[in-house]
Length: 129
Image (cartoon, rainbow, N blue to C red; front, side, top):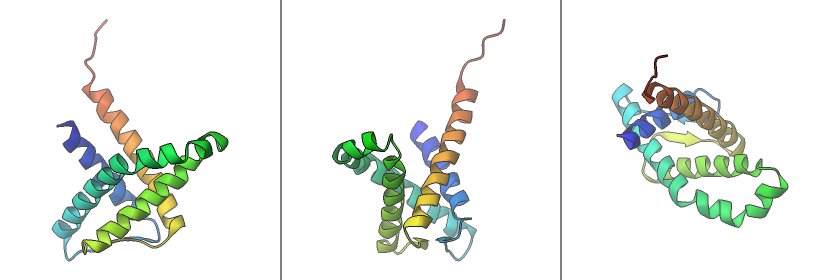
């Protein structure tokens, strides 16, 4: 259930990021766009699970030297890679370049964090005093 919820949160985050210039989501109709967002969200999750730990390990020194700001570059590259993979699967999702990927990944990270926090907070049991 938590995985499904995380995929839905990522879908909403990616959908919001498509409002930025340079990030396009095509599709014939709303259903096609929702399915594209679903597959892109799953791809982004897989890319983050598989490649992000490798990038963090290889770029450990850069993370330390930049006080973690290198993570923004890694997230942008992973978002851009997701766009490339979506293109190879003939999905109508495209990120134009690095800066579009940078801002898109930043939006996805912020929105996902906020939505995850809201969901987590609502799921916590409430104690009355």
